[in-house]
Image (cartoon, rainbow, N blue to C red; front, side):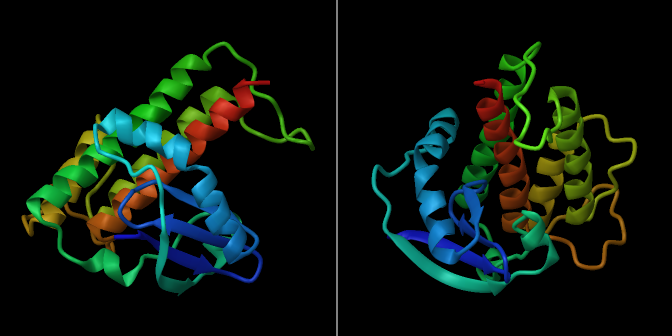
Length: 213
């Protein structure tokens, strides 16, 4: 089977996301450039798969399975549209694999943050870019937002990631959600995992690149 990719297209930016590898998503100005960027990051994602102990192919034949209309989120730099395929039910094995890869993405971010402690992150060409404490805070805050989008209250939760996995599992297995909220359009488990893993890896790779000088 080829590398199943969903492409999210907006006027100024496009995202390409590997549907079976949560977090492996890259953006660029055009569809062609986004797919090229996705494939260029295969070695970096392979390290995530190794951490998860999930076999990762050495070669990838891209199969575009969906093209989505992007919007403001896409233009801002976020893969903000869920694919129709991400509404498909998850088998027990698929759910376990999804969670394993998601947790590996989180662990990759944690490792990058640990290794960059005490390092002044290189700034962008115009002096922009958060320093490490702010990046860590930003990722933590986003985890709370993602938990909310799964349909669970995030306020007062001590371990957002454990709560995220619990809520994701409940939604995937049609069990009652713990501390449900009233979000109108909760994210599907597949999209929620893709979005959270992408955010963790995007910032992990940013930290690695900016800490290297």
